[in-house]
Length: 393
Image (cartoon, rainbow, N blue to C red; front, side, top):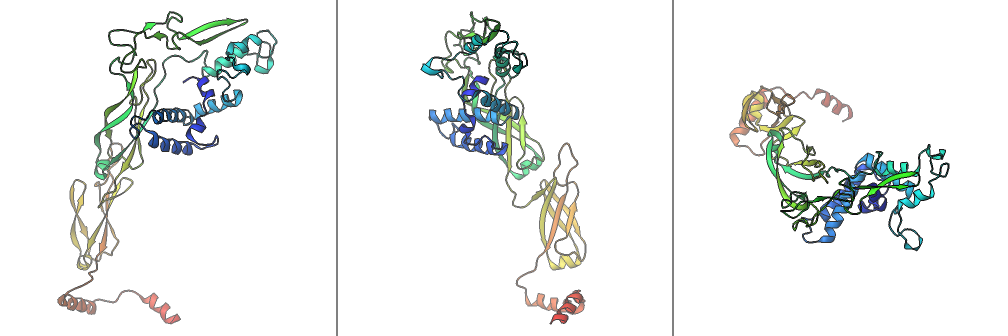
């Protein structure tokens, strides 16, 4: 997308946010629109598809701090719609060469001698803007857009790692023409007007500037017989399946980046990246705290008083922990190395919280035994509590 296109489009209005919107506001607005307008949810709806493309285009610019700054500066300098055809009085088409023709002389406003522009003419200023600071308009290979997807993993898969197929519906290279846009059996030919550069250089007085070739629309090649599948664009929206490796220990909310697995680039440019947002289903038994797993296990009063060997489950088996005599409810026991085992860090632990379970009903024999037990054991240490009660009672 050229900088001229930026001037003609209000990306803030497309996403429904203000110009002072934060990066998080822009991201939330885009995700909301993407869910509403995605082609999978609107099959055959051309209007929704076009709005989805427009939202993606707007997010691509506004989510990038550098692009957003350039976009804001250009629209502030020239005003929205500054280069829209038919913008001049009378409906005449606007051509940047009109400007250059009026400022060709040395010392004229915008000319070589105009110190307000640091000695740079309007051709240099426009060249810098439209090329992103380079020497000419960018018409070469363009990097493809990044793609976002969301995957929900089971708790065990997130802890231990897994590989899952991910099916995406997004733009991709046309399988019929392999991206060149020409009907099978034919090939694009080099544009005779620009000789494949995509640019036409013109002289206007003291200035020389380049503009996109009108014969090939800046592509550098001309397709005489278009591919029937993609109609000459070289790309189609299609389903594609990618095997994604989720490393052991991936956490809820984490994003995984797959380089080069996003949308294909234009004119031979590199593909964008794929970002996979991970959601983890809660487990009905285990919890997680960093790289440690957590587990709560009930024990009886007798086990708490006398101690016991307590078998507890792990994600891949069982382990036996020793409960010391006189263990209070809420005490934590540790099974080292039985937590999350990541490749780049020491394995976490399994933290087991024992919870003394008090029965709501007991047999007569158990009641007699407890009464005998109560007579033979010292009372609970409530001396300070009893002293306070007597003081205020």
